[in-house]
Length: 207
Length: 110
Image 1 (spheres, each protein chain N blue to C red):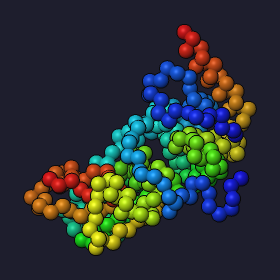
Image 2 (tube, each protein chain N blue to C red):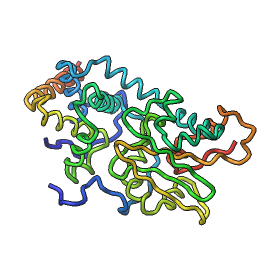
Image 3 (tube, chains in turn blue, red):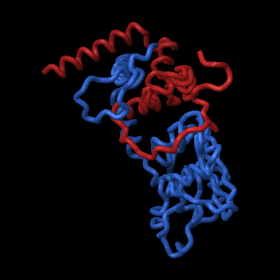
Image 4 (spheres, each protein chain N blue to C red):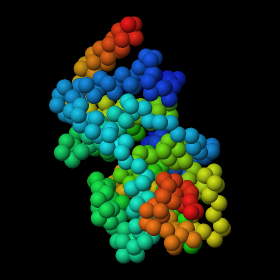
């Protein structure tokens, strides 16, 4: 297959009136053929898009807040992330989840250097920067410099550990519970946990 | 053909500029590509496994890999793997793409 499509626009408007790009045309043609052949149905495609849109980092926040409040759950989460998420009704699909815990002197960051593997079931689809050449190239070599670009400055004594994901094995960072949050409910704690701190490029918000 | 050893996708440890944190909203066609990959990889179908999608992306070659957007790589790889497996033929695909373009041109002309 040849690529007839140099110098394209990566971000045409969603309601574009202009001509379809080569690959947009390919998507439509491929999808129509697969529906006609009975490989998938149009309803299944719609449902899969809706299910994907419904997934947000809130699920990851819920898991982390539960681990902060329930030590037994936290131990189960670290021992077997997939099974612990299933307890909360979160299906990890065919992938295995490994949860890496931040401590007083260990900070974890996740990446997929080869492509874009990401704990989608907990966080939704990965942000553009996670898939970018700059992040994938640099975070394994100079994680502190990359973290600094996200506004995260770690004291020198921290051991920064970078985890490279695979198609079958996804990582989630378990951040440290922020100081001064002992009075907060699990729900309020979950609100402090955004997507980026679960990837490890930031720290949880302070209340 | 890329050199044996390190492929264009294998970029861990290389030098690169700052991380661009700007986000774009995923377009509908991109979401449909993602949905198709998920559905075709479902254990009840097993038409396209994740490792096959990956291999297809890695075989696009360095120039195409860099030029194409993320979901362009996905749809190109998915299409190539389905062609290889004979689930669709290049004749069907070529004809259908021409039809889609013709329909689009007709709609634009209205």
